[in-house]
Length: 240
Ligand code: G3P
Ligand code: CA
Image 1 (cartoon, rainbow, N blue to C red):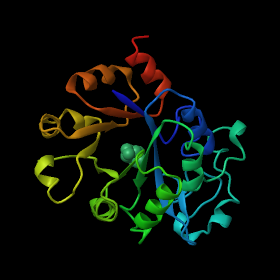
Image 2 (image 1 turned 30 degrees about the horizontal axis):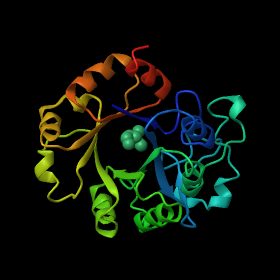
Image 3 (image 1 turned 135 degrees about the vertical axis):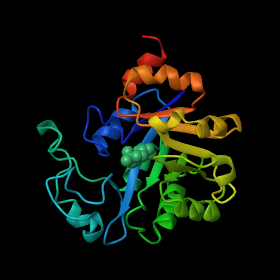
Image 4 (image 1 turned 90 degrees about the vertical axis):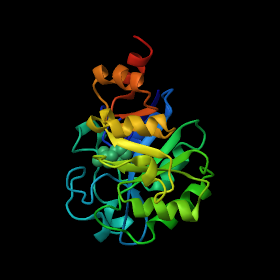
């Protein structure tokens, strides 16, 4: 079963920062997951929330700041004093960090609250610049974003994110041209997910931090997990 470091190694470093991604780049895991939003000057930046309130020493919406303005805030001190000085990464900076590694990069387009018109094109441009086409997976809870990516770049792997799944995923893929399904942990045990697996869909599960769940998911045939603590999950899967 593949392991993706969720927002980097977010169990030991401030999420979605250079420190969290650098730590992940040193691990023998499949890849990382990160979240992207768009700034006022149309830079693609890596952060989970629409606002900077929770993960920085500032307040306000990402979309209302330019990149330069965002760089004045600290994105490490909220987590621990030793991380003072961490800034908000541009997507390109994270892709560059992984340019020389084997890791896959799951870019989650956070277009479910604000649509950030054109973010799909900007992300695809960055992926092409860093020659990451074969290593990225682009996902979103906003399936219109996934449709757009599939139309613009059918050669890129995409995934539909679900917090809950009450539909037949395999017939849904007629509308959303993706074969991969990213589901929340409780949802992974639903019949609809089992049916999708049987029909050959790729299923990845978020966010798995309890070792007790790992073996169960492996038995179900789940392809991958997103975890905040990839080293712990690696040890569990290796039987240590
Ligand atoms: O991409 C999987 C997972 O990260 C989706 O939920 O809220 O952690 O971005 P969230
Ligand atoms: Ca995410």
